[in-house]
Length: 109
Length: 192
Ligand SMILES: [Zn+2]
Image 1 (tube, rainbow over the protein chains, first blue to last red):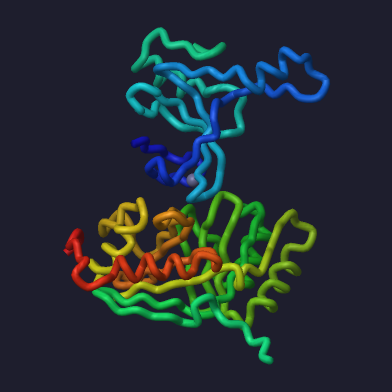
Image 2 (image 1 turned 90 degrees about the horizontal axis):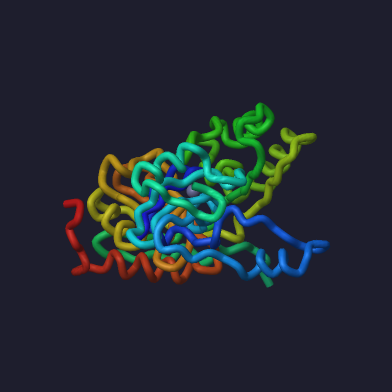
């Protein structure tokens, strides 16, 4: 069971109060993009064992979207942070480094 | 033919180790906007006599109540009969501001669970993933959560009462959940 802290309303809730919104920090490619870019945006998601970044929504709560950094193997949550960002904040990256030295995920490490 | 409004369950009640009541018609207004703005604070004051509540809390008085729903949303609770006037008051107070105010009275249902302090806490603990331990959840707090399979918001008007707001369309489901949770013989004794 995942325990998540919603950064929007401060609730520490268990998984069923939230809903996963898939991989975080996707760069959108829409009309006018190349077929390869559009295909990558739609279908090429990472599915790592270990450090992962996801979007979550506090669906049975404040209703807001946020980001979570967690380990897919242990369900440990390294931290949650605002949805209004294009990359994980340094504070979150530092927390992951403290527990998973040498981690990397897409272009972040 | 009568056009008189009725609440979802017309005041249904059930008595177990705690009492469950559907509270009848309640005036409710959803207000969305910038909760830090002076105009919103003023509108809430005019509508309810209360200040904008702090994160996950509610403020209550004779004139009405106001609850914190999300970083940009409040739930204003007033008498059902006065809801149209209150809405007009809010709209006038917020003219020129970016906001949304909607009368949701007939889209919601409200329930009261009352009895012993331990009994009402246990009833909600059976249905919601919320820590109902004294100290962790107390009067003045307002918590949106999940009640079995539906969204709900809960608060404690006093130590022996919990009130619940849910969508009207699931009022019967909510009542049945609560009826089963308060059934005699179903006491777990978690808080007693
Ligand atoms: Zn939240």
